[in-house]
Length: 380
Ligand SMILES: Nc1ncnc2c1ncn2[C@@H]1O[C@H](COP(=O)(O)OP(=O)(O)O)[C@@H](O)[C@H]1O
Ligand code: SF4
Ligand SMILES: [Mg+2]
Figure 1 (spheres, rainbow, N blue to C red):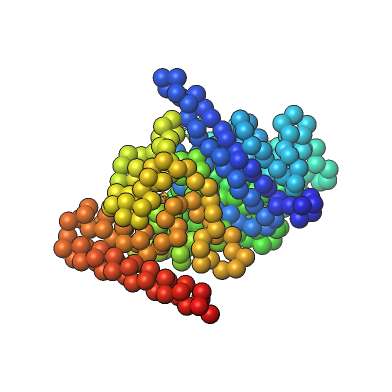
Figure 2: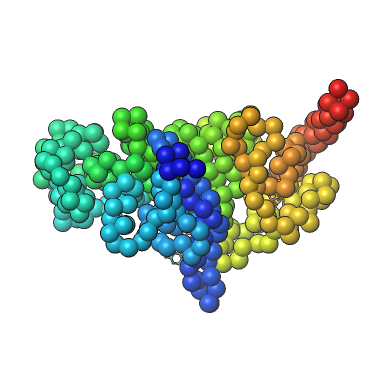
């Protein structure tokens, strides 16, 4: 692969660990490979604590991976001060909390001009700052120049942070929960602003979020992270219409935008990166295991003992990059039946039990049909 057709950002087998309490080690990022193409919006989704911020900081060079590499435009990122400064002109970060990201003693103008000065960007500073503010929706920009962070709203502060990043004309914006600290009323506006920037400037965005609903609204592709790993990845459409990993399916089941599914309750304790389970790291919470379906399918020992990598989802469109890490990925009907049974058991409701039995029958029928189709294909 030449540098020209390499992805913009390419992460390979990234591992980041932190010392944790009682001498244990938190495997915050535990083998992540992920790429972002020029001009696309990729959402990285997962529960709090699964390693999203650590991965974002690693992309920016704020954390050093203990293993693996970060490549930008085909070249390995280097961590000496000069190389990092050059790299940060191309890759900028938008943090969760704009109040923390801005210096309380700096005016809006100074905040946006700072990056230009650090990067020694040539040109008319005032014009560049004004253009960046206007592009971020702060108009007329001159009215904001002399204001301090406490004099503007939370949404306006995030616009200033975005202007400070975009003034450098980066190729990639890494946005860590960019709207979660904002009032619900302005979240949509900030997301629209970011999408507008993608259209106008071609910048790519890696947006980190715990909210799968937000991902549906803005991303081209989605990567789902669980306990330091990517467990499913595909186009937003693929993940919305045919999520395959039981964890993705559980996240999706509580998203209002996709409320055609019954809410899925996950069993077990919240995940802890100092104690990553053996085998599939999701197995202590997986409905396929909890419902006994994994045992019936003959995969339970593998769920508990055999670690696994992302593999292509069977039945995905040709050329699709829909991948998932699950031993049951070949039997979606069984996963659905397991979910229905887990729900029925949790609720102990007769109608939920009846629906579980129905799902079970549908899975058996679908499998018989698949076997018949296979037999027909072999004959032909
Ligand atoms: N600087 C740090 N020192 C020690 N542990 C950390 C540090 N940063 C993150 N962690 C741990 O790494 C795990 C992942 O955290 P984080 O990347 O912030 O997750 P997320 O952004 O998905 O909520 C958590 O268990 C967290 O406690
Ligand atoms: S591999 Fe097994 S435990 Fe893991 S998600 Fe798939 S069915 Fe559940
Ligand atoms: Mg975070």
